Image (cartoon, rainbow, N blue to C red):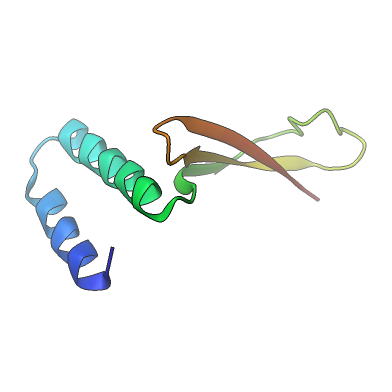
Amino acid sequence: MDKKAAYITIEKLEGLKSKVDKEAARVALIFELAKKTGEPQELKKYQSDACTNGNDDQCSFDTIYILALPDGTTKRQAVCCF
């Protein structure tokens, strides 16, 4: 998706009134981008308050990524932070 197309898409999202509609449209666009590029795309990112990988002795907390995959599914990926 080129920058102009992305900008137009953002304008369309801003025109939606409902937060639920905006979120559903945002998620659909991210999945569309994942399918077009063949690469996982970030849906959401947040930090945990503890290590979720079972490496308690190696990290203090994790950054959790929820990824949209090209096949239409999602994947949770935890990255250790120190």
